[in-house]
Amino acid sequence: MTNSQEKTMTIEERIEQAREAAHQAGETSGKTSPEFAVAMETLEELHQEAGHQRSAKPQNSLERFCNENPDAQECLLYDT
Image (cartoon, rainbow, N blue to C red):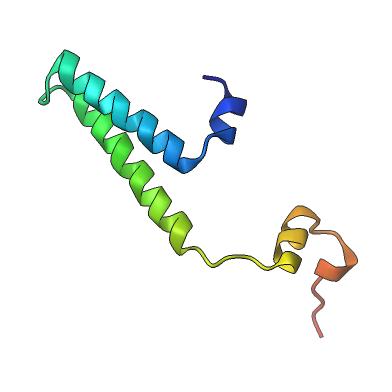
C-alpha cells in the first residue's frame, strides 16, 4: 500500500483492514503470538483514533478556510 492510498482510506476502512490482519495473525501464528498482539494493538489504536475523530469539535467554514490559508487577511490575528 502506498502513502497516497493510505491517506485516502477512511478510518473505518483502516479498522476493517486491521481487523482482518488481526484475524489472519491469530489464525496463522496463534492468539498468543507477538504478531497477533501487534495486530490487536494496532486495531485498538485505530478504534481510539476513530473515537477522537468523532468527538472532535466540527469546524465552521472560516476555521476550515484558515487552516488551508493561514496567511489570508481574514485569518490574521493582531495583538492590541
